[in-house]
Length: 77
Image (cartoon, rainbow, N blue to C red):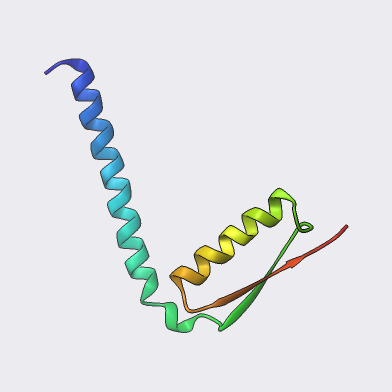
């Protein structure tokens, strides 16, 4: 085999092992979902900032993967 093909194979195997480990840890954590609170509040920077956008993305991901409702509270300084 050429050296470049070997590097590609090793990179692919490393990436695949990372994906598998994430899936295994997610399935183990989802068993504990019954212990989660029904709602949480996350504070962020003011509406329109990058921090608010990122926090809103976290809210969507948390609500999609768990049974929790998330409220994002903008905190003005």
